Image 1 (tube, rainbow, N blue to C red):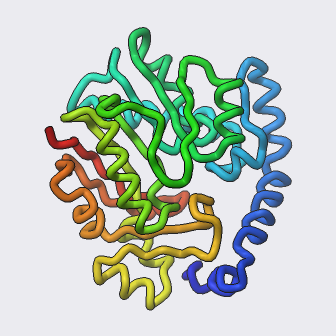
Image 2: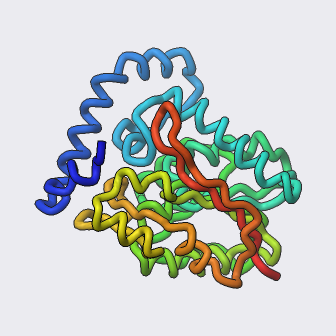
Length: 268
């Protein structure tokens, strides 16, 4: 089913945020009892407010906590194909309510510098109050961040470029290069070729021409703002600033469509 055609009238009429709010209430009703039981069984674990969690991921406490840890270990496993992470500095760009970054202090141990940054002020305030072992910082929709030049050995951004405009692709990649150490590693995810099935015919033609496809008419950075990334576009974005170590195309899974994964090394 082509969801692009189904949602196009809502987007054109400026109703996407209302449609997304309805989706939130459906998830809240569907998962409410399960989430409450899961939280009761883990009294020492802080879970984000429901809409904060929904906006950044899914309203599912188990997927937030256990899935977040699996993702952290997956990121660690990929990075450590190239360099050890113990005692190094890591940044979660677009950390949301710390689904992934909250697990890194335990994974990396003493001596590591673990940071998260996000443009949502309420989310960062919640993280600072409830998540220990991580330095959280607030950024704006456009760069810069508060971090120093060449501060991080490792940077990852999970589904962040997927919600940004073309100018912010350029601006944010430049910022990630600024805060990366020479030889630093980056992991980024994008909406690759497998997502073409969700695009309209006009969007598919644009994608096949190597152009970034952006679905706007909503607040940029929000989950309903969507960007789709031809691999040739991403390679052009990286240019000579970073070496592509791996490009792992996404595929169809039983839970949905998988994003592409890019593993980069900043050129010295």
